[in-house]
Image (cartoon, rainbow, N blue to C red; front, side, top):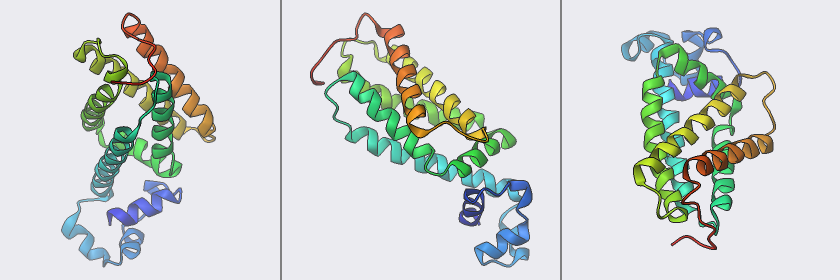
Length: 194
């Protein structure tokens, strides 16, 4: 059912337009069986948001860990590219996910995942800023994640989102600005991280 909903939303269908009967048919399940597992479509949507959030976290984590950029700016550029490509690989699904998060009141869960990912980002940035306080670096990366989520979420809701290259550049620019404004005293020009 969750996969069937994801497929329908990825095609651009609105959750309100997807019937339980159509969802059950797409999943190959009798519509009467739907209520044995789910209360309504929103309960399927909640599972889908959780599944996508976990999938994105895993994908971003794996890619972040593999980055080996020689400079902080290069790291920021590569990270920005990874984030945009991950979230905008299916813009219609992202739109439905953003709307679903609001509809179901899941912002607290998303914030917890944001914190978890900000911790990974802080670790990836630490070699470029070795003298930065770990708590402050984590807080900085929370701000970066918030800005990034704001950009991507609002673009997903626009009828005509900005080009991917523009989004990458905007996120990279904002990330650099946040890092420099909060850690200007410790940003070091380095050829490679330790």
